[in-house]
Length: 428
Image 1 (tube, rainbow, N blue to C red):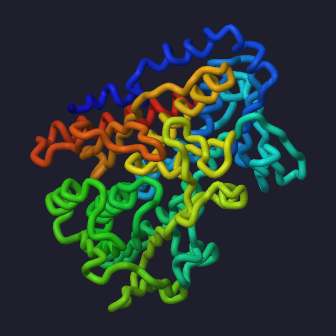
Image 2 (cartoon, rainbow, N blue to C red):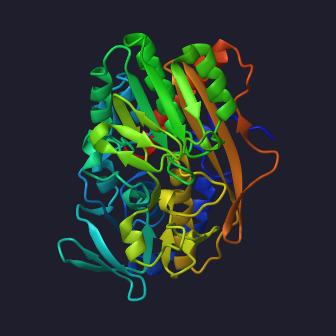
Image 3 (cartoon, rainbow, N blue to C red):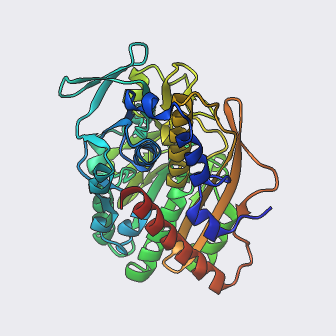
C-alpha cells in the first residue's frame, strides 16, 4: 500500500491514538495506580517531551518528571536550512512552557547516573530521584574516539553541526567566508547514525548556497558507505540542479575517512588526503553516555529493547526511545521519536493499570530538501516482532524518480508543514 503524506503529518500510529489513550483511562484501578506512581524521563527532545505530554494527558494524577539540562531545545530537523542561510537559528529554538503547563515537572539538571536495579537517578546537583518507570530519551553522543584526530576541540575549527545550535551557526559562517573557487569537504559516517538522509540534505543545501553565492566553489562528499537513504533521488537532483558542483565518493572508491588532520583541514582516507577550505566532519555516533553508564547499551553502543513496549532488554522498568534505541528498520528520526514517545507512554499507562500492551504499527517519514523548493521523501510502516521493528512489505516508499517540478515543490511544502505540526504538537 502507499502512504498519504498528509496522513503522515498527523499520525504516528496506525490505530486511532485517542481511542487507545481512552482505553487506559477506562480501567477502574487507573486512578489509584497512577496517583502513587512516578515516571522519570531523561531527555527533552521530540521523544522525551512527547512521552511526558502523553503520560499527563492519559493520567493527570501521575507524577511525571522530565530531566533536561537545557532551558530551550534547538531542533535538528530544518537546521540544514540555517547552514545554507535560509533560516535563522532562532526559528529552530523551542521552550518548555507548554509542557510545564500540563503539569509535567521539569528539572533543568543533568542526569549523571541511573541505577536501574534500585530504580534511582542521580543528578548533577547531587539530588536523587526514585522512579516506578524510567523513559530514556537521551539521544546520541558523537563518538570522537572512533575517528582519530577529531575531538571536541577540533570541532571548533572543523564543525560537525550534528547538534543543532552554535555548531550550526559556525558551519554557516564558514561557508559565508569561503573564498570563491574554494572547496567544501564533508566526512559522512557509516550506519547507524541520527537522521540517515541528513548528510545528503545538508550537501544539497550547501550546493544550493554555493550555486547562489560562490559559483566556482566545489563540494566533495567522502562517504563511509556505498549506499545511502534516497540515493537515486539525491544523485539525480544533484546532477540536474548542481551539475559537477557536487562530487560523491563512497567506500568502494576508498573514500571512508579514517583520520582527521585538523590543523591542516585535511581528511585522510586509506588512499588519499583531501584538504579543503571548509571541512564538515560528521563523526560516528552511539547512545548518549548516561545510557551507557546505566548498562542499557550492548556492544554496538546502542540500547536493545523489546520492540512493542520499548522496555530495555537489559533492565526491566527502563524504556529507551528515540535515537538511542535499537529500533532496527525504523530510522533514527524526529518523526520516529515522536511516534515512539506516544507509544511508550501508552504502554506504560496500560501496564500501571494492569492492562496488557497493545499491538500496533508505527509510521515514519523523512523529508529532505534538495533546494528550497525541491523536496523528496521516504516513508515506511513498521511492526513489532519480538526485539525487532520490521518494515512491512508493500508499505511506504519513496518519491517517484520522474515527478514533475510541481510535485517536488509540493513535497517541500509538505516538509515545512510537517515541521510546523510536529514542533507545535511537541513544544507548543
